[in-house]
Image (tube, rainbow, N blue to C red; front, side, top):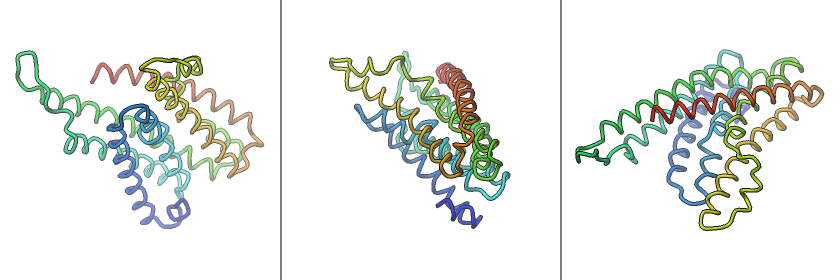
Length: 243
């Protein structure tokens, strides 16, 4: 897939569109999964690490910096639109509510949907160029810059997981009772959001032999993961107020 995208611009455009649709549809489907599997499915297909990894790899496959930044941004924006259009037209979970006086709350539901769509589109426009450029640098830049780009990219991807993971998660895994399964599902999802970026980093490092600059990768990873976790915390707080 990577080679096809890099070699043929038309094929790359089609592939980006297909990946965007798949991401949006899978994220929409994950919302309907109940029980323990729900949080895990969301982490795998409907999280910052899932969509960010797709943008990072799209940038890595691009033939130049401009197309890397543009392609990653188009991917995230298109996936966001697909996801929220499915909510608007298919699940319609914004409709059916009532206010205290018994009148329809559909207008407020639509307003909330519009606000969240706008917010995530803005996130896509900001994150897309950055992830696309970092992904492209991991393939084309000199060793020190490529190592920094790989560490920074995967630090950005893992920030959501570090922000959400409770300290220490292994104690929550030992919880018993009726809610134990749900708690373990959330713990597993949060671990996925941390492990997957590390796996992506290992693959990027192996593909370019970036291990020779492991100290630069580690530095970039720690710094950007910390900043990303803080940004995700702010974003979550803002989303709760807007929603």
